[in-house]
Length: 354
Ligand code: COI
Image 1 (spheres, rainbow, N blue to C red):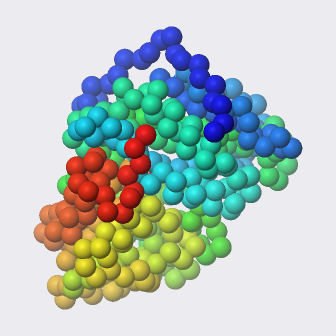
Image 2 (image 1 turned 90 degrees about the horizontal axis):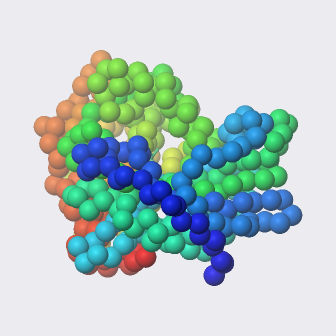
Image 3 (image 1 turned 120 degrees about the vertical axis):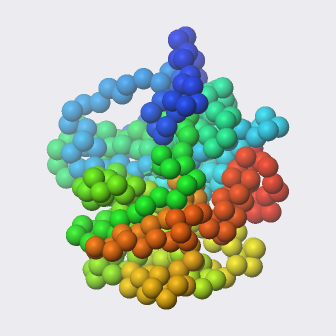
């Protein structure tokens, strides 16, 4: 165990009312910072009052986007426990993203220890209303003041936290998704499977065009043939066709979602056929046309399980399951949130009590 210095705020903030929560708009009283200096490694882990950062304008993160992030949540159970969901997987994925972005590996045990201490300190910020949680955003930025294009010598690992409601305004109700034809999110060999800001910055244009047409998000196709399904802006995607649940196989350009992995395991556990494979937009449209496209849903930490009620591709709108939440989506939602909020048994051992 590393010693983490704690400086408590003397001016706790007013907490937002549940109807004001939204997603990622309010931040708790404290944050965690760990510095990295070349030659010294990660050091000076501390929890301090939430505050602005002071960085040199030449800090490399501002110029070349050398940064990675994670998304996780803390939940309050009816018994009053604080739970996390597979947090060790997030820190393992953070290090996979670090490796791709030439950022030194973070000490995963230290990251988890710091997170638990921060969550305990700001426990009163975990909302308890239905469908609310404390969203946790660990991230790393390159802080060396230098304009040459090379890996930074210094970094900061930071954790901030935000009480949240649903990511989508629709909540658990089905969202409408636009299949993107012009822009691509990632290509083989690029940074698609890393959780890095640039992937999201490059998605904004298509996202803006989709929302102008009334769509919640874009569905990305592969960057080479513009034909194979990859993922949605903030979630992985699943389709149920003729009784089998299918999700695109991880191929280097798709984000390896922890909710995605968990839902595949839940489906297997419940005996529902599930396949990870390449799946084309043509196959989806054909399945819609012949009546075998039964359900679609997205999975993610922020999005939880989000049913998809309509896909638009070109000039055509394909309504799925009459725009209603499907049986499998509901089952996965109930199982996932049941485990997270401690309402049901956790045969997988995913729940971590803080
Ligand atoms: C998450 O689900 O935690 C994510 O990181 C998606 C985010 C871009 C909102």
